[in-house]
Image (cartoon, rainbow, N blue to C red):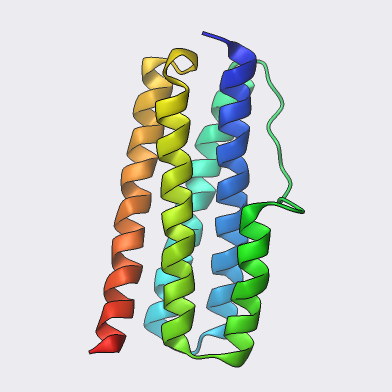
Length: 151
């Protein structure tokens, strides 16, 4: 196992969770429906927990966890589009954008797991797989809400 690569993987996932926290924090401020505010708060809370778990693992390996939001990453570009959707379009477009964001986060976890088997302990692999499954459940909730709007 390469500890530096493990730390890099975990820091990338910390960044993803930082981005999710900011996205859902902002989404909950601009949406009017209390049920969606509650859902967005739940998602934000989940990423806060995930981030804390990841940071703890980085410290455990003797690394330094990253604690900044990406300045030029994929999520920032998505976020800029997201802000314009919030201003210009409706709830359906917002939910579609959030669904896509969840899809990107899930794929980042999948890729981290599959591309780094030799760099992740069984404990780390199990933790990341568990986080990925909960993100998949979040994705499915957002998708279902978006689908309901179409009906």
